[in-house]
Structure formats: C-alpha cells, structure tokens
Amino acid sequence: MGPFNFLTRAQVDQVCADYTTPVYVYSENKLEEYADAFLAFPSAYGCTVRYAMKANSNGNILKIFNNKGIKIDASSEYEVYRAIAAGVDPHNIQISGQELPMNYKDLIEKGVFFVATSLHQLETIGKEFPGIQVGVRINPGVGSAAFKKVNTGGWISAFGIWHEYLPEIKRIANQHDLIISKVHIHIGSENTPKSWVNSANIGLELVEYFDDVDTLDMGGGFKMAIMPYEESADLQSIGEAVKEKFEDFYKKTGRKIHLEVEPGKYLVINTCSVVAKIADIVDTGPEGYKFIRTNTGMTEMPRVTMYGVQQPIIVVNDSKETEEYVVVGHCCESGDILTAKLYDHETIEEVTLSKASIGDPIVFEGTGAYNAAMSMKHYNSFPEAGELLVRTDGSIVEMRKRQVPEALWGNEVEVIV
Ligand SMILES: Cc1ncc(COP(=O)(O)O)c(C=O)c1O
Image: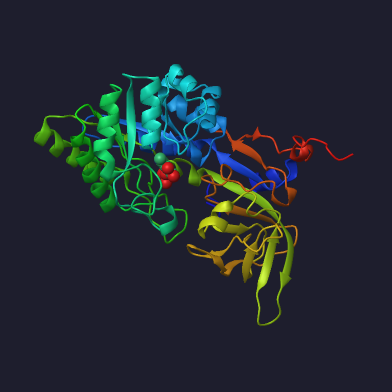
C-alpha cells in the first residue's frame, strides 16, 4: 500500500514519462467495484440504478456501467446523444433536464423516458405526445445536503415542479391523457442515511397522490468519502431503511412501488486521480504563505473553486521532510486555488505535504466526479487535458486525447483580416 488510492509510484512515473500532464487517470477496477456495490442496493420491489452521467460523461465510463446493466439519467439532449453514441439503448435512458431539449421529439421517438421538470415541459410533451407515459420531477419543498450550494430542494431551488402545483400537474396530464408513471425527487447531494428515510417518506406521499405511478426515483446524493474525516454512505443500511418504507406503503395502499436511484459521485469520484506537475514554488515572506503552483487547477478540478471541497494531495518524491503549503492552479485567477477551507472556496488553507521541488509530480485523488465533466478548460486558453484508463490488467491506455491547441480557436471565423 503506497500513499495513492489506486496508482503505484511506478505508474505515476510512467504517466509522467509517456503523457503530457495534467492528465486524468481512471481505474477500471474501481469503476467496476463501485458499480457492483450499487447493483446490490436493497429494495422491496426491485431497483433500477441509473448513472447520473453529468458526474462524468466519458463514453468509456458509460460503456463500463452499461455493460454492468446500469441505466442512464441524462441532463440534456447532448448527454442522451452521447450515451447513445456509447452504445446505450435509448430505452435505458431517462432525461430530466432543466431545459426542454430542442430535439425532444426525436428523443421520445427513440424511446428515451421523459421526466418533466416544469409545467411548461409537461404541457409541451402532452400536446405533442398525448397518451404517453412520463415522469415528473417534484420539488417537495424541502432540501437536504452536506452544504448549501448543493441543496436542490426547497424554495431556494429552481429544480423540479413546486409541490403546491400537484393539482396543476394532474390537470395537464388529464387534459392530454398523459400517464404519470414516475415521481422523481432529487433533493441534494451528500445526504445522511436519516435524510434518505425522510426522502422516501416525502417521495411516497407524492406517489400516493398519483394513481398511475409505479416508480419512485429518489435521485442521487450518495456520499463517497475521499478525505479521512469523511464517511461514505452505507448503501446497505440506507437501502434497508428505505425498503421498509416501501413495504409500509404497500401495506397501506396495496401498491408495490419500484425504486430508482441515480448515483453520480458515488460511482466515479474515487475512480480517478489527476496527475500533474509542480510548476513553481513561491512565497509571500515570513508572515505569508508558501505556495505550490501547479500545471493544473480549475481547468481540471473546478470543484474546489466552485464549492470549496477538499481532495487528498500527494507530492511525489522521496523526501522525508514535510512542509505547509497552499496549493494553487495555473490560471491567472484569484479563484484558482486547490486547497481551500472546507466549503469556503474563497478562503485558502495550508496543507502538510512532502517537502516539494519544482518539477515534482503532484497527484490529486478523488477527482473522478464533476471535474472532467464540469471543467473550466479553455480559461487562459489551456487545452482540455487527456484522460487515461488503468485497465484491469494494469496497462495504461488513453481514453481521451489531450486537446490540440488549434482546437481552441478552430471555431472562430476570421472576420478581421
Ligand atoms: C437529478 C439528479 N440526479 C442525480 C444526481 C447525482 O447526484 P450525486 O452525484 O450527488 O450522486 C444529480 C446531481 O446533481 C441530479 O441533479
């Protein structure tokens, strides 16, 4: 066991020698491990696992999950087309997006399941496709999350149809003979087991309101620990507790409700390490800080800039000494920091690392979710980083090439000559 999550020192050296850094490195073993963990989620009357592909949308990752039997939750038509291009059967894809897709007709005709997240979406689908089965995403009026910015329920949230409009949903559905077969709630990220039981109660109350609903989609938000002070969601105990609520609901109503869950982060966050280099070391005098400047940053890991999350960091060398550093990114941008106070992205925080030298590799663990997919690439005109996969036999292959700089301006039209 080295200091790394899944890489070995030899693999880090190999990556640095053979590829341009920064580069995302994923583990096929880890992707399979977390997929298997989720497929064992307990349920009363069946469970469908949908990968929230917004967390990481590389087609190879979609293929690994698709081969396991995991279905897809997409947030835009482009994610749908991307999943189809990766070989996912459209019937295994659901879309629950903020924006009505331009090509919603094509998606529905292909067999994609549509979850309306607004009354406007429901009405539009009803007019175009009367009689079809659809889902509705409801904002149940309460949210829950590890921190405020990722709370997606309650009156501060624009996600889903506000719960007081349930009669309006019924009216629109009746008008167009739509069959509401699924209730969808996703009330936040990194929830506690207690909040899952709470969510199940809220969701089942909504289900009771709609006679034709046979599925409750409880969304994602399953915590996966990446820092030593964090605790992962215990899928078995959450599942068992939720299962009980579904059984109680059956006893009360005679309706056996199918469960759906939409994990994003849990499936991928711990399957990737960003391998980068130390570009410089600077300080702000005896009263100030010592800064490690890296050749990565918000371009590859926006979660720190956006949310102030923390990720394990390893300076790769043989030094026995340690030092306190603030680690920053390569953009000329005050927000480009890699060690922030927890959930406070505006405040820098020192971390203890191996005494570093310019040129040392530096590895950021737990970077597989909402980084490559949410990247602020192209800022300061840095090209998109490549993505590598450590296969189950230990070999390392490229699964996305590093962008060539010309692609940065390739879509520009030369107007000024
Ligand atoms: C509708 C929906 N489902 C699932 C997820 C996945 O959440 P997580 O990555 O926290 O599991 C999200 C994340 O924002 C979401 O909006």
